[in-house]
Length: 150
Image 1 (cartoon, rainbow, N blue to C red):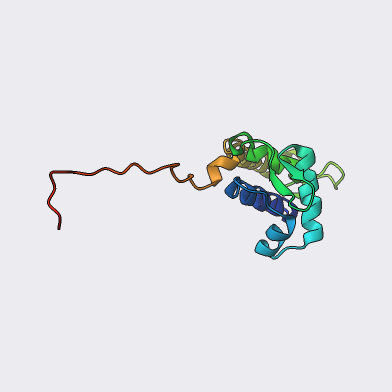
Image 2 (tube, rainbow, N blue to C red):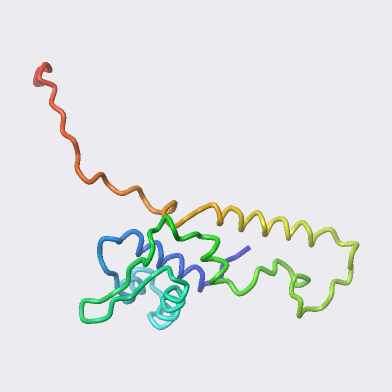
């Protein structure tokens, strides 16, 4: 299974926004970071907004941010939303030619099971699972009065 470039850009955008949750991020910043077309990324961002994962802030100091907590953005849902189909072989496409092997082919069910397993793994993960753990808000300093200085 191979994700489309569109889905790749959507996931990269969400990862970048999740990693920079403390500030607004621009489309230009993401496009430059990943060396992708700003125009193409604008379409991806628009669809992620419709999906409800991100929101935009207009104006001179505007930008993008996650609309929901990263823990509420399911990867399986994102991939299903951004992929047009999951046809692992031509025989999966209802508009395609029928399989010449018909019911004698055991490959179709194997690929159905593989696709289901693939999506089940994604369904079990959220954007938060992909982000590094945030640093502690404050470090606790401890002093041992009994220790000798080196």
